[in-house]
Image (cartoon, rainbow, N blue to C red; front, side):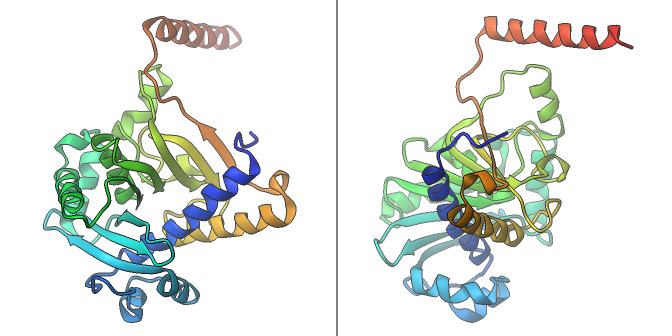
Length: 287
């Protein structure tokens, strides 16, 4: 399937995604000083690639950080040139019990409204907006569990969040999410959400889980398409940017999927169900 986006628009999306993928790795660092650029030792601890640390220090300031007992962690970054502020929500830490509990809730299909981490995130974001730490309109990004949180936040604060850039996040509906979609369930995507994943999303236990909520899903070829890792995906995004600039979109391995953001009508669901039944019956008659 060829990408539906025009080349320039796709490049803009990928360039912004490359920046956010890097910031999502930076966000694993704890104890950054507000008002200063992220320090080298903490970024090293967060496993930010050595060659990309200068890029972070040249372009970003940390404004505030959240480290909650619920396990949710988020960082407000400000771009030095332009002063735009954005919120980056840290991904899952497999050594922290609250993250494992939150992940289990997602896996069994519990809605974001009962997830303690999501509720904590919404309250803190509202407080930051009230205090002027965040503007009234801003972008949000997250990786893995953080991407799930970013999309849930968009649903809670649709007028405040301009766009969500999510990486390798689990979808909604848990283990049965894709089954519900396949059976014709009334599942729709969230507007102004772009999800970035590898070319083999369905084979990942985490980001292959549930129905993807991205209005746009961009699949990126990487060195290891079966690896759930923000650095691996970020490197793939940066490589595809160069490929498109040098050789054009036709030589890119990028795939773009647009998902519906409005509920299906009863008539549409009946038509979908009839078509599905006819397809199954036709297949059965051949065997």
